[in-house]
Amino acid sequence: MGGHMLGMGVAFVLVAPFLTFAIGRIRRALTDAAMRLRDAEKAHARDARLASLATLATGAAHELSTPLGTIAVATAELEQRLGDATTPIAADVALIRSQVDRCRFILGQMAADAGVGLWEGAHPSTPGDLLGLALERIDGAADLELLGPAELNDHPILVPERAVARALRGLLRNACQASGGGAGIRVHAERRGDVLRLAIEDNGPGMAAAVQARVGEPFFTTREAGRGMGLGVFYARTVTDQLGGRLRIDSTPGRGTTVHAHLPLFREASP
Image (cartoon, rainbow, N blue to C red; front, side):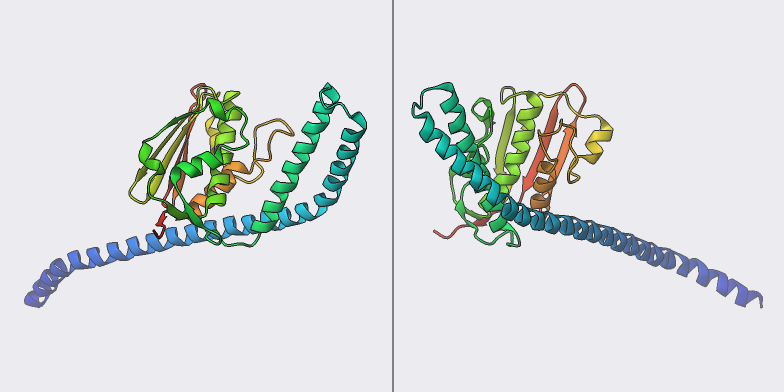
């Protein structure tokens, strides 16, 4: 009996490390599976919100087309009645007409992109072209400081240019609005392998931790009414995630905000 008990003890000592190792691997596998499940649930919820916004954009484009058309016709009649295009009133009417045209163009793009896959319609471009396109229609863009090697304009790539440029435009516009203009904003850009790394630094007031935790939620904004809908960061994060990249925001109250975007979006274009 003594020998039997001794054998059991020896067997337990020999088997225990293997059991501990096996149980540890099982626990790690379960933890990894739970994390993947949470990530999948977050991605599903984000895609559902994006699909809802696409439906909303399509409806908005349809509903707003009629009043925008009416404003455009009325503006054209006002321009004809004023005659002299050099008066301040004529300049205001021309501004209204240009903004109406811009609204109609944006709504048309939103409706056209609704339900379209990210890579559909991709065509050759360069990282420099993406940044140039993103800076279009941003007040104060001329004062932005772009930092990056000249090689950014080499080697065209196949990329969903419009979606990526729109995502970057939202981040750049946020930086300009936070800083009160483009002065003091620096955009660092570099290409590392198949990844475009961007860092957008502004000199705005920064964000408190509670605000930073909510940045990226749809329709969350700290601006006054009429200055934004709170969709810029949400859209940029969604596009970045769909491309397999990541978006990180670092902000300190009183010291500005830096948005880091890593976009592994490159597919080499055919020569």
